[in-house]
Length: 336
Image (cartoon, rainbow, N blue to C red):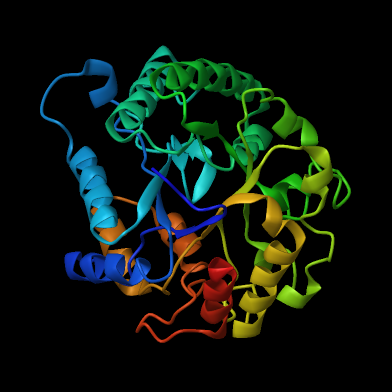
């Protein structure tokens, strides 16, 4: 996998949850990105029992990689043991497993799945969980178990694929205590550096996610020094593994197309020169009804569906493919 100085990418989420939409969307992604970020949950039982037919999920991952290659895109990965819409909980664990990183079954499956990705795809970038500080806030006693697991898997991946850059991601608004109800009694901008630095030296780069529309009323309100503390805290490369800004008001969060422009400019101007890669969540807005139907069929909760809806207008294009002003800004930054 070869990527430019700063690689620009998206999650490969199409406007509708259909096969036709997926196929068209990969072609569109090839025009605006260098890579996609694939963030699969763990097929827990398969990677502990190592028996039976290979689950469809692994076939789907291979197909995503193939579609990416056919459209001139590289692929980065983040192994995700947690519910992406509620990172206080695991996702898809068998009912009789303990939902803790101390669980031997959890540790075995997590390790084996990460190594499967490393061996199968030899990726340039491999994350070993997403927004882990939100789980640490909710389960501080189990966080130490995740940390030991991370160190074990880091060493194992490096043994398999020495060039793969390994990391875990941190939710920036949460690290800054800007999320309502999740401040832990700390003042805003009192950054939880200890949660990041606990992983040193086994962090090849420092990687954040950032959705500042949950903390600011507009993109213009993002402080000029919002992201710059990262520059002085580490000399390692930086990256944004996911993020975005809604272009219309959804629920309690306001948003306009200009807010997306201001968000992109804030990241670019403040930390752009240090970014190894930059993932914007969605190229295109998605159809909520289509996604809800797919989520209902897979047994997802109504709470998860409502949470997902908060991101439905984060795309840099309308669902129809009509570009928003921020897409031109993204393309210009990428061309630099």
